[in-house]
Length: 266
Image (cartoon, rainbow, N blue to C red):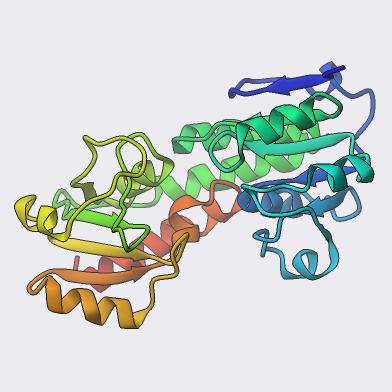
């Protein structure tokens, strides 16, 4: 019998589900794994994905339960967690629904900074880390409030893949981070992660191209290749974690955004 399966963001209290703190937690989302570490849940977290690289000591020590898109359902059930934390975009719905038939599954849905803060609060409630979550949220809000962007907002393309080239649309968390960074996403009118051509960058008068470190690991050689095809445009390698990780990594994003704009000359 399904115990609880939430596929939307909402405010809850831990007492609604657990009479005591969950003792066996599995995280299927890298950024939320890092958040659980920030909450000090070292003993409680028993399983993570192969992409949960932060913190490193967890990556080397915790049981791997597959990737975000291909979780090992049999292994997860064998570990008998009393809480599985997933995400609507990161994980495959059919797999999560199968897990939810037997396990407590909490699924987050994060598309904006505000969503991220709600998620942090919710997971803090679920794991009995109310105070830690409140402190973290306050610190993140303070850091973002100190992020000052100029009126000039360079027209920007954020690339996440090549062959084919793919970017991000206006309904993504990355797009919201671009806004906070002071960047104008030239593909904001598109949805999710559309394929594009380099010629579209010229048509849209793109001024800045960001090459994300994830999911495709763009490197300096890709920057040189694109610079030849896009003369006159500023191209910068970007830390994808700063734009797409919506847990405790948000503490570091504002300072990173400041330095990124400096490298663009603004």
